[in-house]
Length: 278
Image (cartoon, rainbow, N blue to C red; front, side):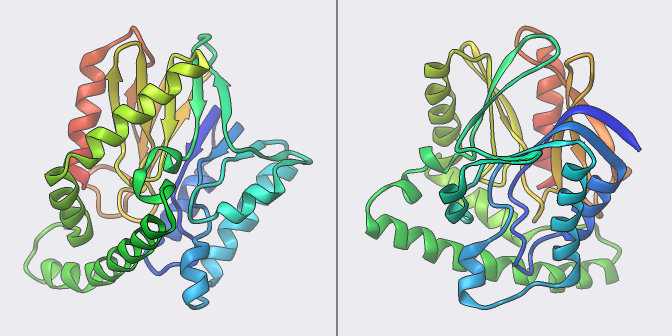
């Protein structure tokens, strides 16, 4: 088992059929952390309200997180919009801490703001009508996710690799309105008020590393499509980890990225990588 100074996961969406709990369990079993950040949407309460779906593997993920906390990992849970009810319980519970936002300081002294990101998404932070739109969009996204297994069953029959209809549709629609770019810029701008060098979020299921002035933007993706996370070693270097079962890369292979002021070429390599994974 590899041990890291810190790790970040987001958007597992336990309680939905799209959740890749197997890949997430592989990640949690293969790695240990001094501090593990759960950056929102761990449990999809929106989906559970529509109907209960809770297989054993989803329960195993929760039990694995609790076990890590009992063994000494500091688990910091920053709720998102799909598990926002958890914000009513902010506080410390042994080695588990629930916070609306957090500041992480890397071994190299870089300050990183940790938020889920829905705070900056106009679709979910607006009026009641906008909130209804977010629920409607979630239903459509879940429907597209449900088609992915059938599509890829057929593709495998023809010797073709993994392809995600939901990721394709998401890119086409959101690129058309420049949603992702605007979201990333808004998150980076928001982080400036916290006197940090970087910001890490989730929410939009699009793993990325971007530069916005003096702020580095990190998005750790999700465990529905990309199956990605970030880890930090004792040297302060943050690495993108891919556990997607259909990736051409070996599950658990690390792509190293560095914090502000370091190698920009490596950052671009990882951005290109994630565009291919989607």
